[in-house]
Length: 408
Image 1 (spheres, one colour):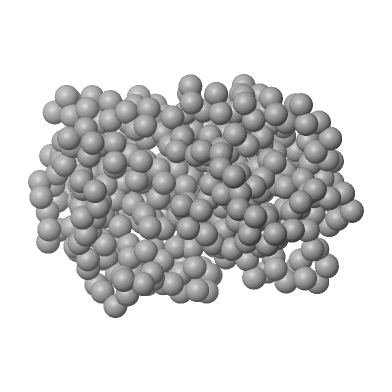
Image 2 (spheres, helix red, strand yellow):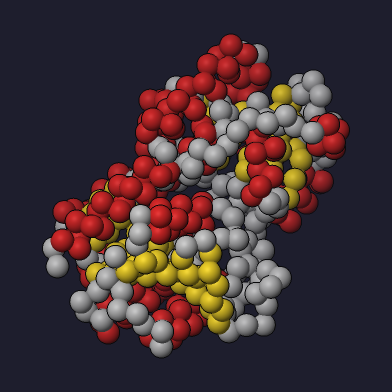
């Protein structure tokens, strides 16, 4: 198959979307498929284009055994409605223009969202090249998430977003959902469930427990402390403030919480920690992917927080599987499908989302129950190896694409 894989976020950017895309693309290319990636000049999450990619409109590079086409996008360190819209629309416009003038008669246009604007590239290309199959991957339900979080309140923009969403679902030849909950909600919008397949996230299982350097241990003064790690985006959806409040409550219990990553809420959170004299929550900042293992090896458990809103009951944060792969027991602040998977795996415990008191209590429970903690560590690794090896998930996705091609 000749596949055009369109994703706004891609390596060397870090996070769940780039990781999933890279794993899928590597697998497709390994299986002999001709894969071309369309993506932005890397800048996420800070909004600053990486060195080596600045001041360029277009750039083509070879990665391993596939090609990556990058296009200029509008970026800004300020994250508000206007800058986000310009960010999304600029990629939509530049990506479409670049692809039209470099068309290679692809068999499949595979578009992964959010943002929804990325899908519009696929819609336009499908109109121009109707024989090409258009696959739309749904990693988050937009605009539902933005509306339920209060980020998108203008009724006119809501209606426009819903219309865009409907067009993408209706005109796609196949929809790939990353959760069963998303599939159910898409069907509830009136879309035929027969065109929707679920291919969940997974982990690449590359994690190996390593001995943490003395330099790193000394840097964070962690000896004789129970270490909780959060590795991910510091954003609105995660409500990291709950972790800060729990940290304050645990200041006298030899507990430290490491926040590994950056994001739009970082400055606000740091100011909150400073104003409230919270010293046992440590902002590590952004680190290279190659260094993640050492920080996860440093921890006794990993935490997954999300705001307590209904739509997140249908989501599955990818770090659930990454923590399991890292043999990290899990503290989960998400209801619904994610909690069901955690219960099945017996790899951790849940706390009430947005409830700092309950979180603090659960951290102390794990701290005081070392045998259960050890068993959760073993359970998680075995579970993800058996059910959520990322390569097996990519194989499942390939199978769906091949079935679609057989219908031609």
